[in-house]
Image (cartoon, rainbow, N blue to C red):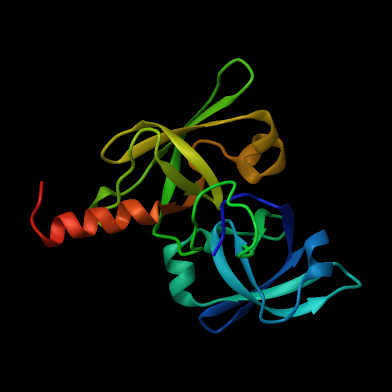
Length: 200
């Protein structure tokens, strides 16, 4: 379980293909605090640490084909900057919102607009999946907990303050960038129940 508050940035140091899987080595100061089998969110994708090299400040994760099919991990390259978050402690504060680290689908950046000291990002996604956003609701984009500004059937926008822009990979987004989405878990359950009981 996560909160969508990015703790550090990492950089992809190595990518190794292994049949249908890939092994990704991430370089980050967080590696010094990690142990094997520990869960870490990578652009919002919960993956297990399988190897740690404290001397190099690196650790390795493995992504299976299903993960590659449903997330943007297949587009990563050596040098790619990734948002990282350690699993939430039960005695800690939830500064963002409840994020499971289970990506629902990807989206494509439609536009990036500077708005006098902040940035407005608009994303398009496939509405066939049944996922929805609501204005002022929560959304996780590449593991970052955000508030929806504009909401449509197949798009939404978010506003990014300078701190978030500088300390996440939002600064690397441009038109056409593919990102990971995790929709609000409470909203997903409500939508599912309404559909199940034919309400609305």
